[in-house]
Length: 130
Image (cartoon, rainbow, N blue to C red; front, side, top):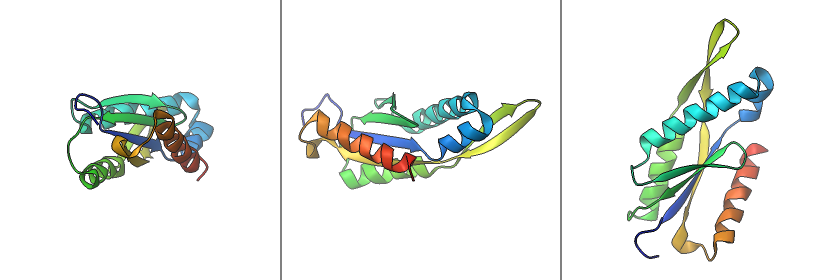
């Protein structure tokens, strides 16, 4: 892959967001997603880009030269970091533990962009129905 473009795609899927939405409402789920977005951005490198993906997920485009195992380890560490998101319900503030799972795709291993999106969508679907 030429330098100047992303080298890896990292997908972060929020675990059990459907439970938060069902119990506390979609506005609470949206707050959790915003908190996770801030959290992920604080751990990613400044040159990395983070975007909202389908479902309860974010995709990061990573322009890194490290070995794929190092990148995978870094992304897993970021995803494993426990985040507590405060959600206001009536007069009460409730701290919700937010966890996510991740997958990293080295773009050098992908034959097409469609291959990458298919892998990301399959992982998202698997995690949402888990």
